[in-house]
Amino acid sequence: MHNQSTGRGRAGLLRRLVALVAVMACALSMGACGSSSSDGHVIKIGIKFDQPGVGYKKSGTYEGFDVDVARYIAHKLGYRDDEIVWKEAPSKQREAMLQNGDVDMILASYSITDERKKAVSFAGPYLVAGQDLLVRSDNTDITGPQDLNGKRLCSVTGSTSANTVKQKFANEVQLMEQPSYAECATALFSGIVDAVTTDDIILAGLAANARGKLKLVGAPFTQERYGVGIRKGDTEFAKQINQAIRDMIDDGSWQRAIEDNTSGTGYTPNAQYNPPDPTEGEEDD
Image 1 (cartoon, rainbow, N blue to C red):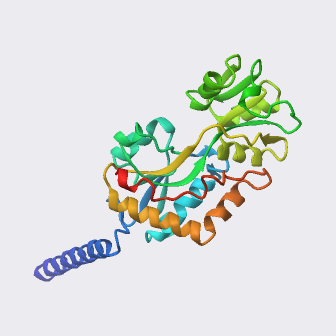
Image 2: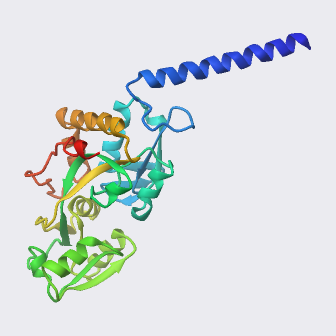
Image 3: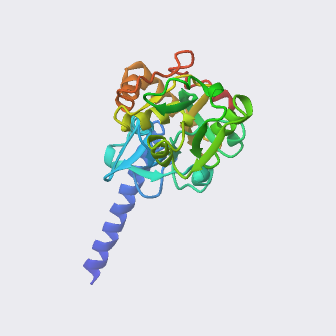
C-alpha cells in the first residue's frame, strides 16, 4: 500500500510538472495561446456556416475566405489544423460569444463599427468589402442600386444593405426578406425577385455556387471593413493577429484565398481599399 501511494504521489507530481511546463511554453511562445481556452492547446474560432465562399460548413469540413484567413492566423499563432475548433457565429450572437469566452476570435463577415467596439475589440481589417447587388446573368437593366425602383430586392432579415438601397438610392424598391442568402439566391433563380443585396464577397460566393447563372453587378455602394473580433481590450492578441494578416498579404496567400473562393465570378476586391492595412485600427483599442 505504501509503495502504491508513493507511486500515485510521484505520478501526481509528474502531471503537475507537465502542466507547469505547458503553461510556461504558452507564455514564452509570443502569446501563441492568445485567449487560450481551458481545453488544452486549442483555439476556438467563430465563423459563419451558411455563406458559400466566405464561411461554409460542408460535409463536416469548413471552407471560404474567412476560413482561409482564420486558418492562416491560427497557424501563425502556433496551432495545427487539429487544434482549431470551429464554432458557428450567427450575426446576433457574435459579441456575446466573445464576451462569454465561447470563442477566442471571430471571422464571420464581421464589419468593424464604433458601436461594436463598445463591446469587443478588433484586429484588422483583413478585407474591405462593399455592399453590392447580385442579379441573373442575363440581366442588363440593373447596373447599380439606383436602378431598383419598382424592382423586387431580397436580403436577409435585418440587413443594413437593403435599407441603405431604399433610403439612399431607390425609395420605390420592393423589399423581400428571407432567413438566409441561399434562400434569396433561390428566389432570384426562380424570378421571384430581381436582385439580392449584401456584401460583395458574400454575393461572389453565391455566384460561384450558381454555376454561371448569377452575376455580381460590381458597383459597391458602401465600405465594410471586415475585422477579427476578439475580447475587449486584448491589444497584444490584436497585434499578433495583425502581423499574421500582414504576412498573409505579403506572401500572396491572401490573394490566392480571394481567387480560390470566388473563382469564375469576376469578383475583385476594390483596389482603392484592398489589400487593407491591418494595423489601421490598433490605436483605437
